[in-house]
Length: 120
Image 1 (cartoon, helix red, strand yellow):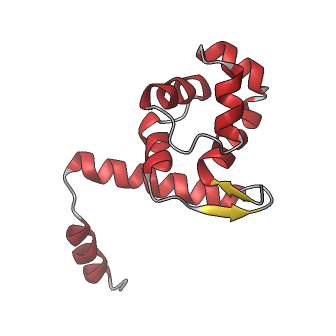
Image 2: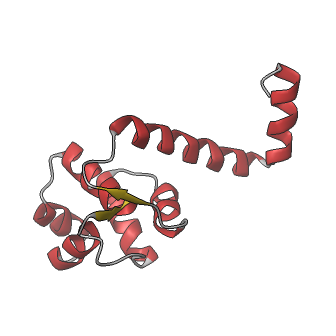
């Protein structure tokens, strides 16, 4: 399969950063190895929320970020690893977006701030 889903790449990258095999992730999360494998191979496009929460907790990832990745528009990559720089930038924006929502900051508020700062 040439097209890989961002969710799959993200979970694989985070799992490897922790030094976990698929089996170890499955064992610690309480999920089956088959489920982890199918998610990482892109066979399960939108895993159940409970599954994502278990993976997030095991990998120490913000569950809201993982759910956002899983249920946003499908984005595909052709071959290779998801570049760490892209992953980090995407994560940072997702975390900022979450914080803005928690604080009640709207996109219009951000536009006004950027206008004031002269960053249009």
